[in-house]
Length: 290
Ligand code: A3P
Image 1 (spheres, rainbow, N blue to C red):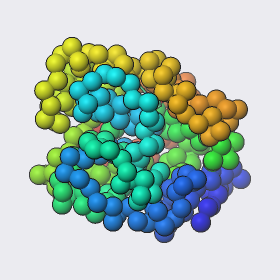
Image 2 (cartoon, rainbow, N blue to C red; image 1 turned 180 degrees about the horizontal axis):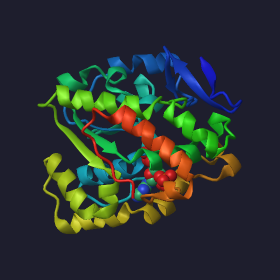
Image 3 (cartoon, rainbow, N blue to C red; image 1 turned 60 degrees about the vertical axis):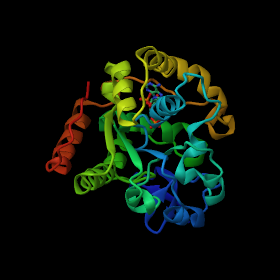
Image 4 (cartoon, helix red, strand yellow; image 1 turned 90 degrees about the vertical axis):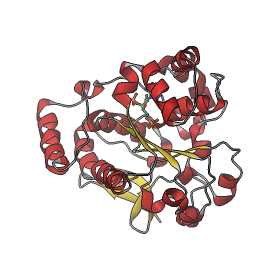
């Protein structure tokens, strides 16, 4: 059912609760479709981009699709057209191969074939303070959430996982365990901050993981076509304006590392760091916050 997640301040975020899991309330995303995802068949050449929301899924989807097509031509599609939890079983099977799929859900809710088929997985990471700010803006701008909260309350909401897709900690630690438990599975872990620092180098490495022979010239062209300004200019107009408050698409907001410093107070940052240390103490993942 649709539920309004109250964080105790009276502010709410509207989500679709499916068997205790918080999914977003896409129009098409009825509960039965969501529950059927584990039964969807994967194909041998499928590629899955897995990321917590706001880690850079749109960016990596665009880059990976261009790599697979070996062309820097802009796709006139938004990434939600190949996002598992935004589809029905029927629309999923209609996607043309080679498929670059994407999702924010954890492995146990994904197609059961994923590990058995050795489906290539690109796992995108980003420092959670920038994710928190980005997700706050996402919740504030999209009509479906009916959310009008303050950032000062949002930090706790985020740390407590009272959002669609739940806790960043649970999601991230869950994937870390899956990656450790399946050393032979083709996983590629990539950081938003590294993509920002040297996109051409990261695109060449990603190409290697995908078994493609991409020229340096094409890697550079893809980096340029997928840079923040260029994607904002060309992809925001493909968004459905009705989804956005004021009819203003805001999927491409700022695209920087360290914007959290403009949002967090010192006290909030220290509180966040303490919770981060507590939850991530057993993790080997590292993050760059600036
Ligand atoms: P900000 O809100 O910090 O700007 P996702 O695609 O996983 O939903 O992540 C969205 C975040 O990635 C947003 O972050 C968005 O602006 C940023 N982003 C989208 N395209 C980008 C690009 N080409 N380069 C850098 N950042 C990008």
